[in-house]
Length: 252
Image (cartoon, rainbow, N blue to C red; front, side, top):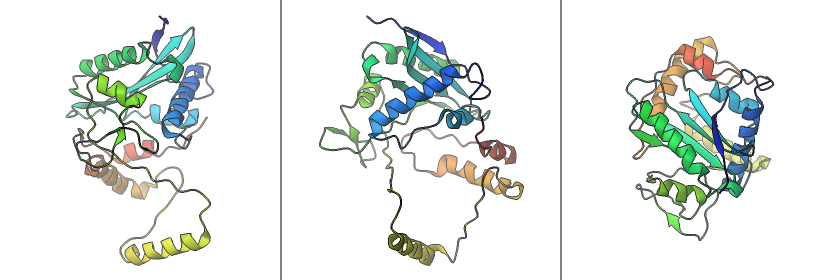
């Protein structure tokens, strides 16, 4: 049996800090497993991009890494919102393909479940991405819309640990560049449908101060307005300060 050790991941102050190496390697593990599931690297993160998410004080994350012979071969993250009324927590868990079925994933999940219980949360949830599904056996959700591959490593792991699939979301993908004539036709249709009632406001970096209160209301509504089927959805508390933190650009 392969021996492994599980450590709590250090979240560095910057991606070029002396203690950032494990975070960088963890990001690579996450990207490799994500590419395997999706069949592409479309959802890969640069370490500095992921670090900005992990440093958000309003959504604290605890990270775990599993090592074999000193090498990080698996990772997990646990996230529980700060809202007092919350009963749920979220997690992610990735194991490199060649290190599966060795007990590493189950050991990481046991640590995640212990964190959830220590927080007094009663519901543990996760999202898992899958690539385009084909003719393999499918697992439908409670909603009856969509399905995921029943025999995938992620599906089998979650079923083994008592999870139930409650909702499937679809990711749309467009290959760039788009033909100008197609883009013009789509833009014309959108303008015809919405131009009388909506206008586009855009910016780069921090949300302008005059818009932060409106954005706070929008983010708060989005935390519960999106269809969630049987998932637990606790309304998040947003204000102008939280919007400002949320919109801080990535930096090294």
